[in-house]
Length: 185
Image 1: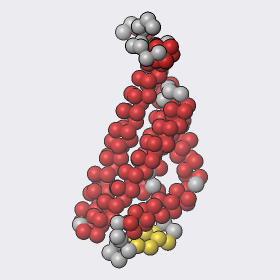
Image 2: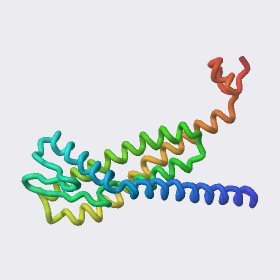
Image 3: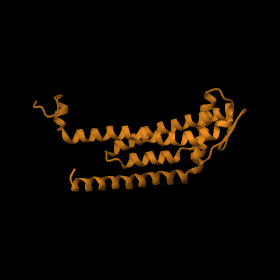
Image 4: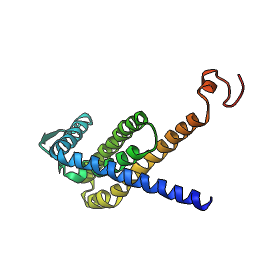
């Protein structure tokens, strides 16, 4: 890599980082503006999942209460921060808008499902092993959510970027005729 290539690469990384920060901050500020809706929605989804799994629970606002445990859903329960990071990275990715929107929807939905699994596991830990709760909540699940963001974004980004590059290097006629790229029809 020449000095000029390295400078262009560093500039590309800086642009991506600034765009990701901007998109992520925008998502975070929107979610914060709708904080009550986000928290009640998280509590409602959590209560529904618990009910489907046979737990007898009721929800009042952001409080989910059962016979053996009760959870007050607070900001950290909502996955807003990891979701902001993920959507910031997706939004800043140098791929077509339609691809970014689809990626944001699918990856965001998967991350919210992972958050529900996190909440369920914490509920059952609080019921069956309350002495483990703080460790599992703070030490185990926090880094797992960060890893989930990376595990969702990196493969999506690599695939999306590879598709964009493939479209740029091959003539559309190559794909339409079913011949290998670069072959004469």
